[in-house]
Amino acid sequence: MDNMEKWAERGIAFASEYGIKILGAIAIWLIGAWLIKRILGTTKVIMQKRAFDESLEKFLINLLGWLLKILLVLAILAKLGVETTSFAAILAAAGLAVGMALQGSLSNFAGGVLIMIFKPIKIGDLIEAQGEIGVVKEIEIFTTKLTGLSNKEIIIPNGALSNGNIVNYSTEGTRRVDLVFGVGYDSDIKKTKDVLMNVLTSHPKVLKDPAPAVTVLELADSSINFATRPWCKTEDYWTVYFDVTENVKEALDAAGIEIPYPHQVEIQKKE
Image (cartoon, rainbow, N blue to C red; front, side):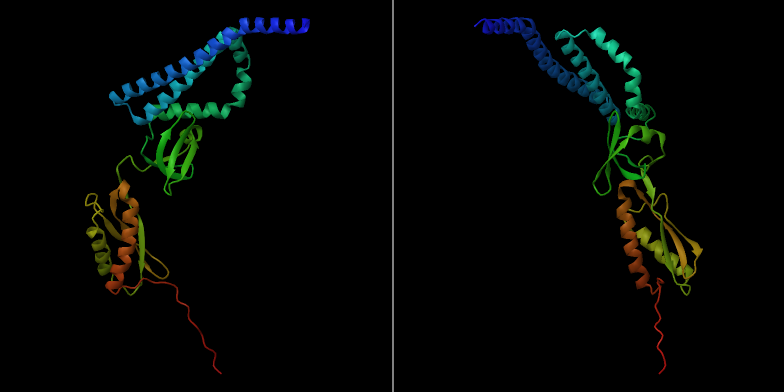
């Protein structure tokens, strides 16, 4: 019984000393999480009313969310009796080790800040970077997400993105479609150029300004190659690319202009 009483006394003492702190910490966590949600929601509304850039808006909301969560954790630790000054000292002492361990993450964070400052890309842009092509879906603190042409998600670290080459196809709003078509050496050059140009000018998504162009590119080994250059809106690029390729084949066939291809000659042995 004595042992039971001692354990009971210890339990009561522990509950009286730490129970209120634990309940207080839980209350802080619940209230803090609710406040963070409200603050982020209000901040987002304000940014939208003031017409903030969508990329900057999401980046700042993400950054603010992380900062508020860190403050919430510090408040909970303080309520539990953890000396936040000592905690900060420990963090400072471990700062070098953490910095070395998180060198890549810090580089990615700095890259995200640079992207927000210089704005080489924004949400909705079609870009090519780090060997990938896709539409910018989201710019986060450490990474940038793209939606690839085949609808796959591509995640690129901001450090590599900000330090590498970026080709932004959406900046100007228009793109030139570079196509090359070869015809036989017996073909009439002027007639071929007229056929190709007619295909370009008759397509509804090919722009009149800048005007499309058809020029002789080279005299190859077995064909005369024509550089065919229509212009279109960025979002119409692949439509124009595939349509023009198909329409050129049909137009050249209809005009009796040969598209050369390798011929296999069969040699028969004499008996």
